[in-house]
Length: 96
Image (cartoon, rainbow, N blue to C red; front, side, top):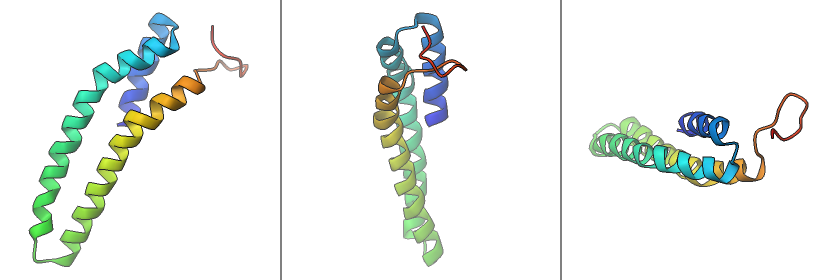
């Protein structure tokens, strides 16, 4: 999810050179599909919780937690990091 968000952010940033606008546009384009995908996979994994095999239950719970954590970090922490650490060029200066 983070790669998807970051690539869309970079695309908007190259077009606008406005960090905050790029973050907002990226969130609006990527947010809903990321949440929908994560929920779909989480629902699919939930079926394994009812499996008689302990390993299936454990893997299901682990994947479910990992998926939700990934979505949360991608949609909250990543935009915050982009806000405070905008893209830089090779000279380690902020791009203008």
